[in-house]
Image 1 (cartoon, rainbow over the protein chains, first blue to last red):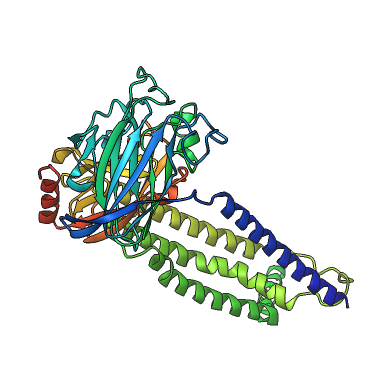
Image 2: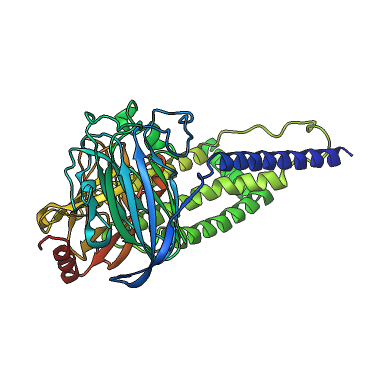
Length: 230
Length: 260
């Protein structure tokens, strides 16, 4: 009888432990769920160096606060944190030419690694900055970067990095807007097969945190996100 | 006469000890676990570390194997005694045992043997380890090494080739059999530059340059990781090292605006 109750107690302990692990995992998984994805709009095909490919467009922005992105009009928990919008999760088609437009509203300073002042991984190794084609910008006045990468693995490699020059702080907001006239950056790149990638900003823009690498730089949903190619 | 009798008694006691059923079982168990440990040491750790792509990595794997083999009989003593005790001397029945077990007695020969064998193993491993560290430290420092500046930042590695026209890349390209010296730093937090199959791992500290060297002697694509937890996307801070023939390396340099 005593042996049976001991065995029952041991079994209950194991089950209770397993339940704690499952509940903790579920809570953590739910709390770190990705924001609603922005799906690139597909519109026909285009001729590229890789042949005729589907063409998709994606339009995003980088802001000096969190009130225009996925955190809502009140900015959520950290309205003064810099952020990308309208979301930080993007869905792109596989084996396609993707044309991206980024409206950059934020000010900035010097990149701490000038490597990211050069356009990398785009079609022709260039981007347009307010209509002008460039392959490199000064690392001294960068607002943010959009740098897309992934750990090597079974999926196709994808590395794209474009610098987003800063808007001078002296520029006033335009009439009827909280933000100044943005720098408009356009570039295209070609996706491979289906895969899961990450992107982040390489300009240390977490003002008020250690070496500017905390806060929005180290929290999902601000200056980093995911890209699903499929 | 007294001394002879005493020594005879000790020899008799020792013989009886080794012929005890429990001792024979423990020795048998120790032999089995030792053999299993040696086989595990020979085949598993080095296999898990992957095929080596440099002499440095081969030396590290040999060290790992030798240390594991040396540790096997020592670990087997602990496991054999523990396992046998758990099975054979387990108290069965309700409640605690009514009497305590026999008291432990000091055995000078056993203590001496334990200290001597342990000391010998420790000195052996120390000498071997220091020699291996010296060999790793000197790798690639001869034969006009090519310098590669390695910069870690959240959450990418970047590589610059100052002797080849300042070519920059997010992936590492190296010519096979050419000594390479890495100058490693970070522009934000502490990272750790790790070329897995080459046995190279060194901290990347902000404001400091740490140096390490290697001679990659196997063509192929290898893994580069950050081995220091460095923030949100630490798990994605990986890239590839491509070890290619010299002609292909020159071609890559030219395609990226550099020169041999």
